[in-house]
Image (cartoon, rainbow, N blue to C red; front, side, top):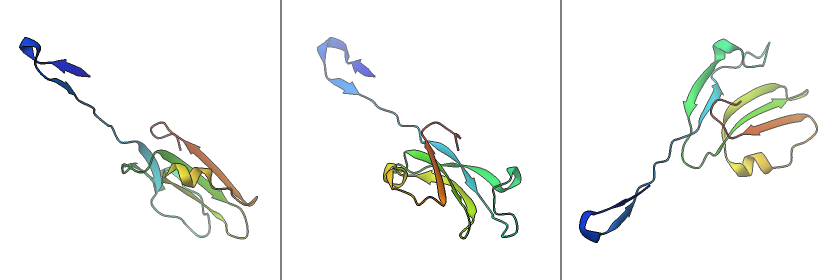
Length: 93
């Protein structure tokens, strides 16, 4: 947004950044290691976190993670036993 000052004065540019919101697993039960609806909370991501991520680990390391992630974390190649999903809209994970 650009505002012009009266009488041909200074141009000022204002930018507002709204933080991305993602789901985050609050607890993981070792007997049932997925994030249930009661174990998920909404968090506001820090400035360096541009994506929401959901990572599912299959056996032997088995469980689920949901959190704010960086673009680099999304681009890292994962082993076949890991399913990784990244997205960039609020609460998409």
